[in-house]
Length: 130
Image (cartoon, rainbow, N blue to C red; front, top):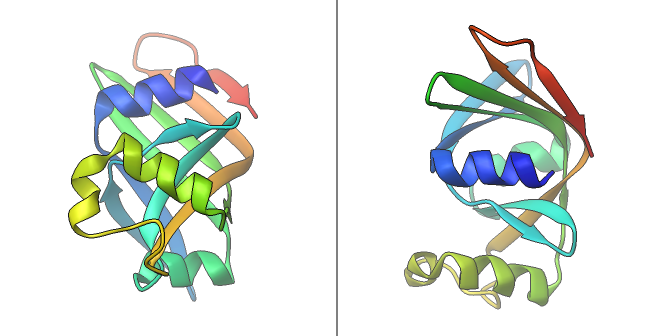
């Protein structure tokens, strides 16, 4: 999992795919955190992303950097503890102009049953599960 975190952190931007009815939805994200041994992302509860994940928690992330890419598939599970929200916002203080761990909107989610696949045009894929 640490390799997945390091890749997403270094890439700075990754793309999160969710499903709305029968339509895939993809958007850029940038938050990633390892907290208590789990890989977390952050969004707002008022956003379509949150609503889509509430209906179908399956999601996939894709990031590209230096000729290699990562696809991370799994379920995103909400962690509604203030400690988890605070840890994310402490890691990304620039988000505090929009979010607060006690605002009722900040949402952090961790990957469960995750499969990460690292690929490139020149090497065999590497698969990591967590």
